[in-house]
Image (tube, rainbow, N blue to C red):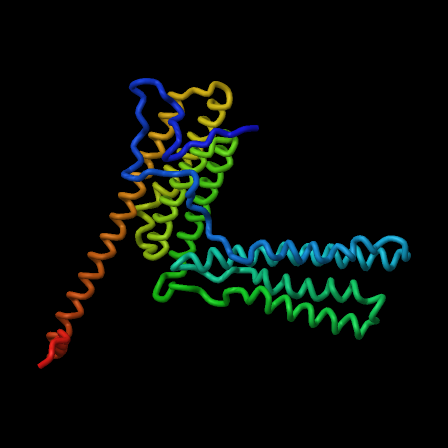
Length: 313
């Protein structure tokens, strides 16, 4: 089915006189440049590992039940290993993209390498014997581990942060991500690239608020309504609009929906800016208090060294 492409240099969806585009909180958006979730550069490589294991699948038949079982188990194990590895790469991309993050609870890439070694050994058992299969599996597991790298092993940017409070923030952010996923799934039913890009841009704005709260969990109280109630309302409105658009193609409803997204984006941006500015004020207060304490202790900071203008003396 053909899809109408809307963008900065494309005709507007509604050309009726008097119909204006909704405000976009000071930004233009283009479906060709859509903010997306973090993506690991090697995310698709495990698929090639699965394709390379197809000889096990093709050679499973004709050599008896033992060969059938071992070859099918080898192919299934390698396919499962590739899936685990891909999930591990996605988790690493999310970890690397955030300034405050916990290490993944499950070391998926490590489990993927172990499963790959076992599956490869099972596939080589009949032709190489037990010792040969063990050696082949061990070498394959080591190569797999080096090819995709280790899982993140420690938390990042969480020094001095209350663990309990951080757990609360993580739960609220996970809930918010579910609402954003619901919005994307609903708007995808419209098969409209402009609307899909608009929802993706709003999701990127919401994630900026998520990151601000992650950096300072004390801001959760001020932002919780945005991350819960407002996102749930946005998801419900998106579902209803997608149903209405599929049935009527009402351009007025479309304009109202885009205006709603613009208003939500403006409010989320303002809230994020407010949290960042409050954090700056808190830092200035801490610096002033520290300077007063140093002054009472008789400690004076050294004056800054004069800058070298580069002129000959």
